[in-house]
Every structure is written in structure tokens, then in C-alpha cells.
Image (cartoon, rainbow, N blue to C red; front, side, top):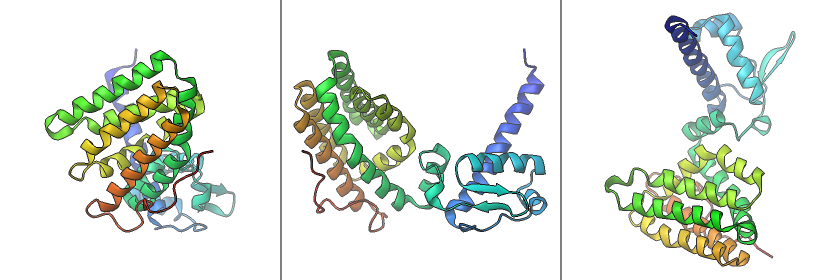
Length: 258
């Protein structure tokens, strides 16, 4: 059994490790170090971040695993271009949310257009009664959260609904993808539901998805999801403080479904 003192040391180390990873990761995402740039000399960077050189090396290893840094003998540690980053990594998503919210919202909307209508189409083909019941339960949770003062639980209920829809597709990779981009979805849902009336307008669209899945109507399910995504993009575009280009404009041609 681990002693209390040992446990506290482990927690302190993990907290410090994440702090250094966060600090370096945020700088890379913010462009403080550009692709191809070398990181500062290890001794200087360790002193600047207030950690040992060993702790710094562990943080660098974590960023190497995320595709953000490359270490080579003699040439040192250099920043890799964004094309090589693991953009589904939860830390990378957090850093993008903090440093480039408009870009993350745009990317999330495009990903949803590619993935969710086809997931709904598959769900309408494959979902069994239990999966449909789960979707109705998620919808009921959304309605309950929408009725509460402050609606603090609405976004989490909304995310649970969309995870359940991906799971109902019967494709485990789609289910895993939904959980991988939780942070991006949460950010998108927070922005798209903060304008007056957005939640009330969203609920019937979610119900239309469930009914189409229950009726085993793939084309209607896909169309219902696409309508929901387009409405969310319009809310994001109208949301106070969001720059132009934060989401696709609904006037753009919708995705085709054959």
C-alpha cells in the first residue's frame, strides 16, 4: 500500500509534469516557436519554467508523442508543423481552444458535417430497440436540463446525446472518435447554445433525429442531423464576440447524401 507521503509526491510530480507540458504546448500552438524552430537550450528552458532538466525532458517526450516536437542528436529539439500534430489529442484540443478558438470551431463544424450525417444513416439501418431507447433517454435528459435554471447541465446532456448517436451507428471507430473530440464538441456546443432561443430551437431538431432513427429512415436521419449542424453554425456565427469564419456559413451548399 502506497504511503500518504509517497502518494503526495506522485501527485505533485504529475501536476508539475502536466504544467510543463501545458506551458510548452501552449507556446507551440500560439506560435511563440514556429515550425522548424529549435527549443531554447535545455538548461535555460528548465530554469525559465522552474523545473529540473529531467522534468523538462519528460515534458518534451510527451510533446514528441503528440507529434509536436522532434528530437535529433546534434540538431536538438525542433518544432514540427501543425500537419504532424495529433489534433485529436485532448491536450492539443485544449490548447487550440485557448489559442485559436475560431479555427477549432470551423474544424469541428466541418468534421461534424463529414461524420454525423453518415453515422445517423448507419444508426437508422442498425440501431436496435435498446439503442433507440438510449437516444430517447438522452433526449429526455436534454429537455430536463433545458428546463433547469441556468441550464448548467445542458451541454453535457447534448454531448451525451451525440456520443449515443455515434454509438448507435454500430461502428466502434465512430464511437471512439466522438469521445476523442469531446473537448472540441463541448466548446462548439457552449458557443452555439448561448444565444437566446438556441436551446429551445435545438430540442425539436434532436427529436427529429431520434424519430428518423426509430423509423429506420436513413435519409431522413442524415438530413435531420445536417439541419441541426447548420443551425448550430448559424448560432455560432451570431454569437457575441465570435470572429468571422468561426463556423461555416449556412448559405454554403449542404453536403450531398446519395
